[in-house]
Length: 243
Image (spheres, rainbow, N blue to C red):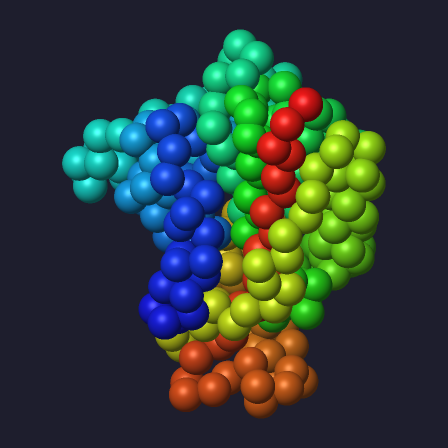
């Protein structure tokens, strides 16, 4: 986990050395699915937004306890940003695939609006072959998470073409080794997707865990090197240097 995350950080750090950075979808301050702490190491000021009030309150407590003073957490809809034009030097998202597909183009247009030139939009998103795409079925059997991510990539590509951005694919697949054990993965998934489905009883919780275990057993051994569960992500940077 540490080495791959450090490699990703080295690749994108030059894009994040800015005065004002906006993060779309900051989650609740947990390291799982969140890069806010990393962003704060490079940008002078990070504004991190999330539409979920509870997540925002939790994230504020997390960064307050860590005494990270250059992070500002705000409850806000990414499709209706309450910022002036040209307010930020960079926009980052690690949860764009989770945002409602019909408003994804609007979110990108808003990101474009609030950016200064040269404009930079960074994506650090789960890969369609990630373990978590399979595990999402435990929480919502009707959701094809892999297809959602593929569709998200198409939205980004279409937006880039229409609005004059170039796409730098820094990584199309990188193994993050996000979970150090199966137990950590199981507990993290139950927390991560609590907004999708919360087990109503201990019996249901145990059944969900068993379903997760059954999925893990069917996956390639490549996902479990050195007792770690690999979480694959992709990292693209959209750039537009001039009008």
